[in-house]
Length: 540
Ligand SMILES: [Zn+2]
Ligand SMILES: [Zn+2]
Ligand SMILES: [Zn+2]
Ligand SMILES: [Zn+2]
Image 1 (cartoon, helix red, strand yellow):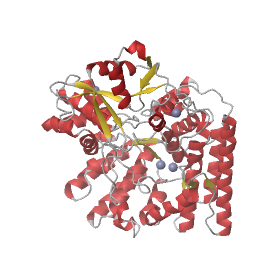
Image 2 (cartoon, protein in one colour):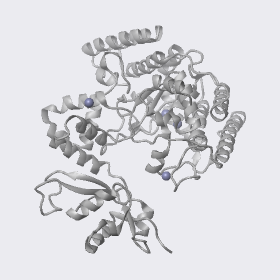
Image 3 (cartoon, helix red, strand yellow):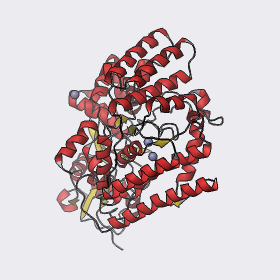
């Protein structure tokens, strides 16, 4: 990619880590067209999900209405309601891997098919089509020249497994690899098959699936139609399309038009063929996003509130620009003063900066910090609100959980504060990495122990005084401990002798020879027993 293209990308997708936009040729192409289309990226943890109007919930699924809250520093997604295909906002979830960015931006470029009188089968096929290229990117096109670690090179997308080594490598450089052609051909075949089966579904009048391993986009499409059915057939959805989605903005009247868009973008992503950017621009996508939130609030309101919201929606739809967005925000502030509607801090928390300081939810991020680092949050006392507000302002799009980001923030501003030490420790425990199954199974059986390394998932952190009450005799001072999540999900915190702490701190930098480490044999056995170290190779 030439350097002025990079500038273009960072201009509009400024907040996204550049490596995620350039990790493969396919990812780079998606990013360039997304940048030209001025797509908006929203941080999932900064964005407040408004409760779903009751009549949009499927009858047997009242649980879909209220979005789930934080659990141990993770804000879960509601499977089918948290994402929709109908807005040009790509979601960035700090707990997801980098591959999602391309998938999300691609959704924005592909768009959606919707018609006011459409049947459920239409909506299901539309949802299926919307996923075709984002999924093909994930499993095939992104893999053509993506770098992978020695363990995973050549095997393609990792499905449910998250490999830190692969994540670190991606985005460094991407030379052509021989197996790339296979991913290209398989991906093209996948797209062709999905489109052919969709056409057959239309002519036969029945949903016809097509499988790739455990994936079945037809059944996903049906599930989407089931969860979103009421919303897709609502009056509000009609207004969204009519008022905010003009020509070239990603809305397709027919499935055929959506299929043509998928074919156009596939040729672009794979071969660099020409593809058109979306027309509208950043402020139209923002007006659309905000307009939808107002429509959603209106669906649960009556009387005067409906009239005022209608006026604000008119402002947003009239001439979507920064000025209209600002006026709509001011109007909503006034509405919330007089009437019982979601607070502006929630309604306007879209996950990216808005005029008048809105956009990111301090409350929601504070709940996340309290869930990940409860003791540190408690220690902040009266300062908690101010500290979290400052953290929210500085918080970036980072694939790093909230507790760790908060501890980083404290370290930047108050490196010597005891609260920082507590937060760092709590974040390590809350977000502890898992052990490696292969390493656990092999243990030190037939191991070559001339060289050892820190076992996978093990993290060293300073435990604040008292944190280990029951586990160590001398809990008077802070001390280095090893933290790791065991296979049963429980987090083990291992107290370390001075000698063991020195050795593990050395291994944090990389493998070392056991003789060089000068650890007494009985201490070595303790580390082996606790599986805190691992060999580099095993014999037969
Ligand atoms: Zn999405
Ligand atoms: Zn998707
Ligand atoms: Zn890997
Ligand atoms: Zn700062």
